[in-house]
Amino acid sequence: MNLIEGVKIRQLKRIPDERGFLMEMFRSDWTEYECFGQAYITAVYPGVVKGWHYHKLQDDNFVCVHGMAKVALYDARDESPTKGRINEFFMGVLNPMLVQIPKGVYHGFKGVSQDTTLIVNIPTKTYNYSEPDEYRLPAHTEEIPYDWNRKDG
Image 1: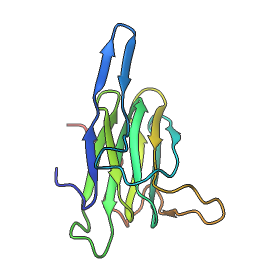
Image 2: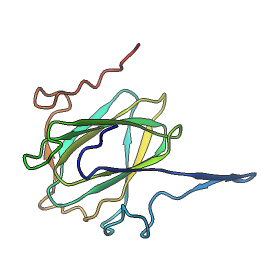
Image 3: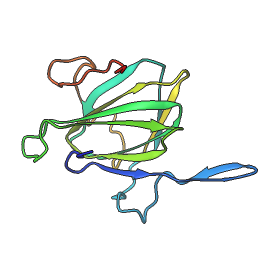
């Protein structure tokens, strides 16, 4: 896949034993690490789309820890060599990975499993309640050439 400029992905490794498993999600010695802002979890119900939005000040670091999510990115940055490019990732229990989403890249996700999907985000900035760093478009908009529908084939 040709990644959008600044997007990084890392396949995550589960370390299983007879008690269960351990999986590192984000480490300060990984190349994806810039700084710590906060950590939070967001939930999406089956078939629901949360999107689109981007940030001007922060990068996001997504890890899906329960269920499966279809995560879509769209590069609308005028100065970017990948302007207009779409990336799509299926991440979660069947494909554990970290997706780093740079400033200025629209992103959203859809729950594609039978139960609630949970995504942990570790952004590089804390949320500012009085001046949120969020710039939104509707989930189904003509401004982004992406179709959230399932692609049977």
